[in-house]
Image 1 (spheres, rainbow, N blue to C red):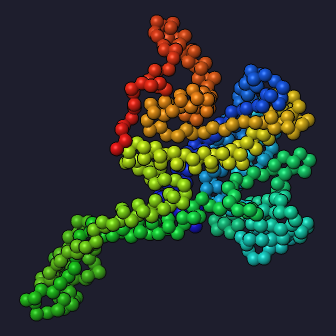
Image 2 (cartoon, helix red, strand yellow; image 1 turned 90 degrees about the vertical axis):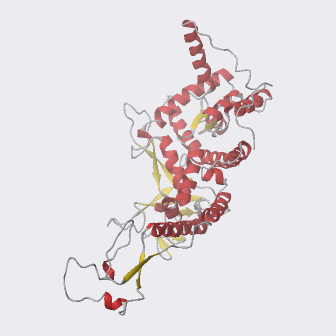
Image 3 (spheres, rainbow, N blue to C red; image 1 turned 135 degrees about the horizontal axis):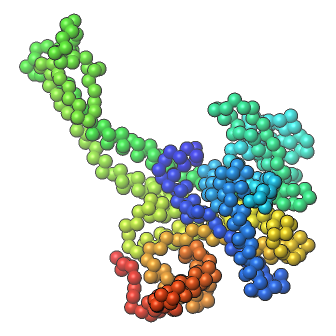
Length: 478
């Protein structure tokens, strides 16, 4: 039902797309942050290492070779995985290996799997009570329980996933459904083999809950109400007519419309079933038959008010304010910004856990291979888990919050830097999605270029930004 609402209802589609756009957007970018104090290197050495690692990672991540299907790069797969989680409750990624090529020195590949393909198996070694979509099964080989395709041991820890070759019960293919057991972690390395992208809300929860689950009924009613009002509006646009008997006519309406057995093409149509309703339709009528049009009394005056209240409830349940969900900013600057900030708290939270559950594990598995094949130097990487964790430390930044008033936002950014609650590097990443060092290098080049042609370039920021100037920027609050 959630997938149906995500595809076929405008509000459901808007909720899914808005969350995807602001949380992941064109993809989350890695900013390596090795903990140089633990590693015993200088800050400058750590920055040089981070620049090299980021370039190497982009070599793999920006190539479609990182996809087992060779259809998407990593940044596209982020959006697919996140949207799959929102629609189905969870999505999965399997680590695969392929031989290196002259253009791709890494063997790591990713295979994205729809959540519906992880299900209880029907095999000789498993016992399922009911059909494959049942809740629980039993692995008779080891006695482990299988909950909706997730195999757990006696402690409740996930040990394997059961993945089918197609969605069970797929009606458009005659292929026999089979299942493969994929261990959750490698036996020798303990490296994850499968990533499950889901946002758990309860203990002992092994499968995710669709994003639209709390508002399924409300969205369905809004959809039905909208369709009913749309149908009513379409009918009102027709030239609808009703036949009435004339007072002076002695015969009945049925007598006048009766078939007289004469097929005369010049005679008016007498079969009521042959009359059609539609915009601008005109029909000839027999003599003695009067016509009256239909004028519905319902003016649809309450549709917008009622539907708006329901959509506001949907937005509140999804932590997306109505203004952001419906892209409707008609209030003052303060109210619109408050709505954006409230929504942005939701997007930052979801981005944090998505980066933690999907992006960071992929980065760590890739970095292991990069160090192992000698393309990246990281002393002590495989000797001490703490050292490896220090090398793998990274931040992930994605799309920035929409700026309603650039002057006010820049003033706030400057004040945060001046008061030590933020850094230029973080502000550059969060406000524009750019790297501070790249910005400085580009500004230095532009300054040199403009001086070459006798043009001046201010070394300092505009004094109206971050200072006590009289420039206010934007519109005054209403």
